[in-house]
Amino acid sequence: MITIKKLSKIFRTEEVETNALNEISLTINEGDFVSIMGPSGSGKSTLLNIIGLLDSASGGSYELLGQEMIGQKEKLKSKARKENIGFIFQNFNLIDELSVYDNIELPLIYNNVSSSERKKKIEHIAGVLGISHRLKHYPQQLSGGQQQRVAVARALINDPKIILADEPTGNLDSKNGNEVMELLTDLHANGSTILMVTHSDYDASFSQKIILMKDGVILSEKLNQRNVDVLVTSKN
Ligand code: ADP
Ligand code: MG
Image 1 (cartoon, helix red, strand yellow):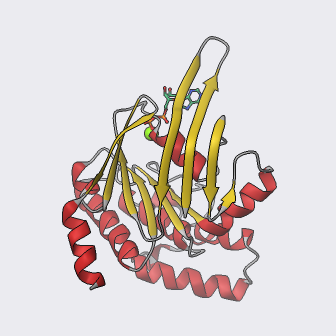
Image 2 (tube, protein in one colour):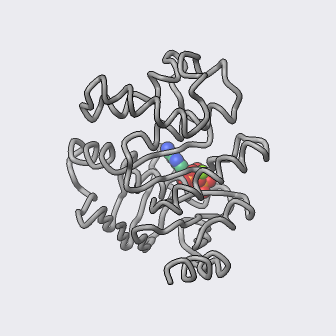
C-alpha cells in the first residue's frame, strides 16, 4: 500500500538546515496497524505529513498504491489525498466557524457527493460515533473527547484506504483516549490500514508493529507479538 525508499526531508530556514528525515525506508501493507514512536523532534510528524501528502519530501521515493508521489503535481497529490487518506490530529484541527455537521461534510463536498447522500452518510457516522445529538453544535461547545470523535468522523467519512493519526489521544484524558483507541482498533478489525504516531506505550500496544524513530532515522521495527498472534489465530 505504501512503499518508502530513502525518503529525506530537509527544512531550511535562513539560519539553520534541519535533516528531519534521513533516508527512511518503510513498507506498510494493506490492513497493517503500525505505531511510530520516538522522542520529540524525531521526525514522526514530518514522516506522517509526507505520507498524508500534506508536505513534500526533499528526496527519495514514496509510492502510494503503486503510484510514485515524489515530484508529482500538487493537483494529483491533492486528489490522491482526498480519495485515499483520512488524517486525525492531536489538536483535532476542526474548523471553529463551522458546525459539527459542516465539519464532517467537508471531505464529501470535496469529493462531489450529492447533498442527500452526504446527509445519509453524516447521520450514519454520527450514530456510530455517538455524536448524533451534537451535529448542530460548534466545536467549542464540545468536550475534547467529543471533538476528537468529530475529527475521527471527518477522517472516516470518505472511507479512506489509509488512516493517519498523529498523537490522536495526546490532548485527551485517559477515558476519552481509550475510547479513541477502541475506535481505531475496531476500524483495524474491519480492515482499515492505520499508521499512528504516539508517545503512549499503552496506545502502541493496540498496534501490530512499532517503529522507533530518532533524529530522522528508524532505529528499530518490532512486531507486537501479542497482536500478531491474535491476527494469525483469527485468520485461521
Ligand atoms: P516529531 O513529530 O517527532 O516531534 P517533527 O517531525 O515535528 O518531529 O520535527 C522533526 C524536526 O524537523 C525537528 O527538528 C523540527 O524542529 C523540524 N521541523 C519540523 N517542522 C518544521 C518546519 N516547518 N520548519 C522548520 N523545521 C521544522
Ligand atoms: Mg510530532
